[in-house]
Length: 108
View 1 (cartoon, helix red, strand yellow):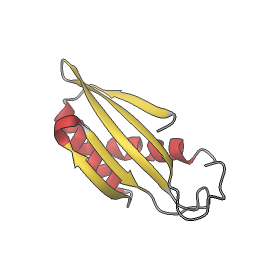
View 2 (cartoon, rainbow, N blue to C red):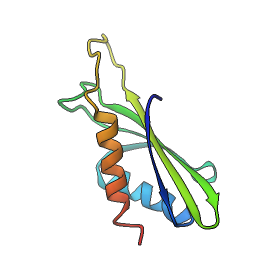
View 3 (cartoon, one colour):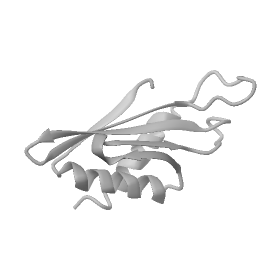
């Protein structure tokens, strides 16, 4: 899915997974699938001035042991109809940053 943004949290995977789901919902993105057992959340964003069809994003959580968890957020432009857009203008990184910031509200 292209370049990704990664952060590590000194919290158990279950806590971080719950925070990620809440963050994605708080931001108004559409969750396509949740797989808690494998630590995967897939969601879509809507159209913006940076991408006409939005982004298809994934949040992948990995239990690092010892009560720590790494989170990797990646994405790609959604493709609908005629493909006219070449660049996403850094939107994937911006979305990942927003998700990580929103997660901070739930990880204490």
